[in-house]
Length: 175
Image (cartoon, rainbow, N blue to C red; front, side, top):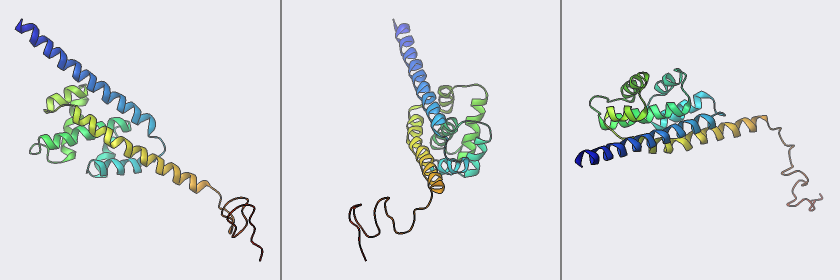
């Protein structure tokens, strides 16, 4: 009886890790497909600011060929590691190196988190927190590029069909 309870609890934990890993995978895919408009430099700066790291650290991860979603997860995992084990991993760069080493060994996010001594829940929360910031970076870049391509309006016309000084199209100011 005790053995079956232990297996049940262990099985429930495995399902929790699988569910959390699935959530992270979904977030990664969403971020990769959504992050298209902004140039790499803007996204690197956004992520560096969000995770309080140097842009060169974020750029180094980007140069490994990872998508923005996976980069964000790596950074969130590294940030969590600096909080849970600050003596061993005092900087984001040192923690990131450890996370990347474990991932290079083919380990899933749940296994990496378990080996590093924390759960995926806080990592998922952090990725969800950063996701809108990357979207905002994309929107800003998109709107700026659209404004650059928009032709200038002639002086004196606030709106097509409005005469200079008039509030409405039918109000013309005669001088």
